[in-house]
Length: 67
Image (cartoon, rainbow, N blue to C red):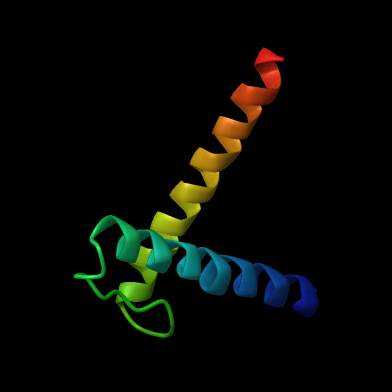
């Protein structure tokens, strides 16, 4: 059970946080610096990353559904 929790924690906090960090940097052309590590900004970047991943998944499902 501990391994599953660790995998979920790494995926959500690190991977989604990194995706959110890259998204914020790209959208603001590098002017906004949000951390994706252990800080209060990491929650914001994590949720941005989750939203981006959900949007990409929806786009892929729409493309597959049309063909």
